[in-house]
Image (cartoon, rainbow, N blue to C red; front, side):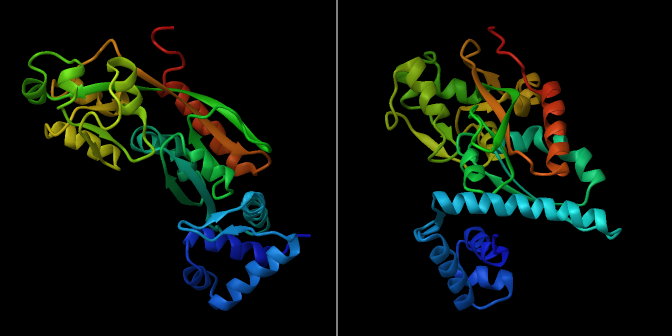
Amino acid sequence: MQDYKLLSALDAVLREQNFDKAAKRLHITQSAISQRIKQLETTYGQPLLIRSQPIKATALGQKLLGHYQRVLQLESEFNKQLTTEKKLQPLPIAVNADSLATWFVDALAPLLQQQQIELNLYVEDESRTWERLSSGEVLGCITSKKRAMSGGESHFLGYMEYLCVATPEFIKRHFKQGINQHSLQFAPAMAFDQHDDMHLQFLEKYFSLQQGQYPCHTVRSSQAFIDLTLAHGAYSLNSRLHIECYLQRGELINILPEKVVYVPLYWHCWQLSGELMSELTASIINHCHNVLLQTKKSE
């Protein structure tokens, strides 16, 4: 039998990334938090936290945290059945920035209107959101990884289509002699963060350019990607969903129309996570089948 008072301490420490803040979250002392973690680790005979920056859960800690999140969801739904009082149901989800900026909120809209939900969104690169689910921090995630983890399920959503774009002014300044290996060594590119290797792989694949051989901004915002591009500060790979209106108005130009990046997206969630997650899964799948490409255009 699990002691959920102890598991709540583990969850709080990982959420807050600080023992003192975790104690305040649970309205107990820092010493009590430390004692609860120690008691858990004594019970299982091994560490559950990697006390680093950031604080991480060990493999067993991740399993316990995932179990705790699912129990919270099921208890929330059970309590909802027992009382007419409407209470917010916690819904921690990991999502990539481009999905959040384009289609994800629309996919959630029906549930937000029908259910009392308290969203907790973790925004990561699509290659790393899966780690949030694996660690037990979230109940579901949008990811580029196909394989479902043990105890979870995976649903194909479709492809995000990325185009390499720039403004007419940027093209005149940097690509007068065409877009080639030489010109790209001097034209500023853009990456989301240190984990975003889309542009890196793009230039390596098509122009044999390695990281460090060209200038590259780091911009941790999907909207800022577009804003900086529109300000003639860089060329960039952007989701067609996000830039279609700028392409139609001629504010942005698809500078390499024959070179398109297709990123597959999958919805991962834990099995047996309750009715709310089942409804969310259905809503996301149905919405994506209408807005995302289901096959690559070359196929």
